[in-house]
Amino acid sequence: MRTAESAPDTAAPAVSGRQLAFILTALTAMGAMSTDLYLPALPAIADDLATSAANAQLTIGLFFAGFAVMQLVCGPLADRYGRRPVLIGGLVIFLLTSAACALASTIEILLLARFGQAFGAACGPVIARAIVRDLYEPRDAGRVLGTIATAMALAPLVAPVLGGWLTVAFGWRSNFVLLTLIGVALIAVVIATVPETQRVRQPDALNPRIMAANFASLLRQPTFVGFSLCVGFASGSLFAWISSSSFVVIDYFGVPAQHFGLIFGIVILGFALGAFAGSRLTGRFGPARVVGVATHAALVAALVMLAAGWTGWGGLGLIVAAMAVCFAAAGVTIPQATAGALGPFPLIAGTASAALGCWQMVVAFLVNGASSLAFDGTPRPMVTIALLCTAGGLLAYHGLVRRRSS
Image 1: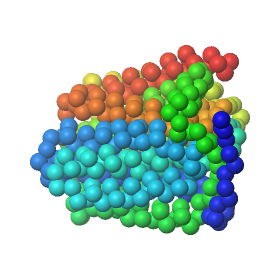
Image 2: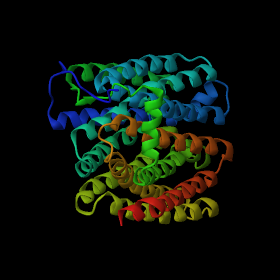
Image 3: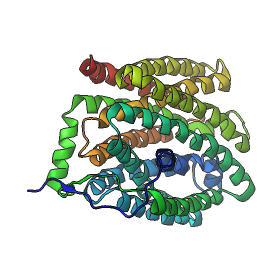
């Protein structure tokens, strides 16, 4: 039985490393842009579609669910057919479903369209990570992914500010119109410039038995599991903020919707600084040590945030400051732990990227569901969930990553 075959030459022109990094950043940011842009519009969506805040929040949760499911399909597809065709197909799906979101007349239609939108958006980060693994060895991959994560932080830094102003000026649907236009632009850029980077096709990658064996081989690798858990739990602390911050900041603390993006941006700036620091430090200390420092810092910040959220001491300012530290820790952890997880699997980088991304989105979906169910109009559920996630990341680091790396 064949297990690999040479990839055919591609007609796509070569691009410089800097240009490719910029394009990969945009692709990696698709999921974040698809959510962060319309966060300030969640209260307006609930009002306009005559639904509850919990149902409006569910548009985030279903997106996470679709994102997780599609990654499991997208990765093996990319290992079988190459990065370019799967990426272009995903972008077409993203374009069409973004337009459907803009035209949704009921919350049910919006929920369905958001679920479909996630299918298209998932192809961006999965294939971007696979391309990085195609081109770089693990330590260099950590540096590149850290640089991409630093630049990617601009998306959630700018998106809520832009989304807030669009919502105030043109209504919540304008956010999805913009996402549709972004889809058009990405399709054009990928077709014109992104090369095929997969050197060896995996002709059996879609065989159910082979797929199961590939995923099982990942789960038997403790370092992959440990780093993946660190990525998932770090992401969970972020999604605790993403799921509830607009209601906490706008409704509980009374901040105007058009100013929400500025507060959100302060928190995201922490992620950018963390990603930048991680990309510089990992070459010297290695992914495991850098992730270890970040997971400890996240837990300390989460404890401070828990005290502020439950007692009211320090108000919104202390919650935002502590969450910015959690985001900085996640900015270190996510790209460096990703590089550590994917490093041992060059031949099934797409499948490994998919498994990692799926777990990340499963955590996001669970966090969003817990945030929706527990939301009581106060910051308490948000800060409690963030603490639980940071504690989980620290346990994963000590239980698997540090033990295997020492």
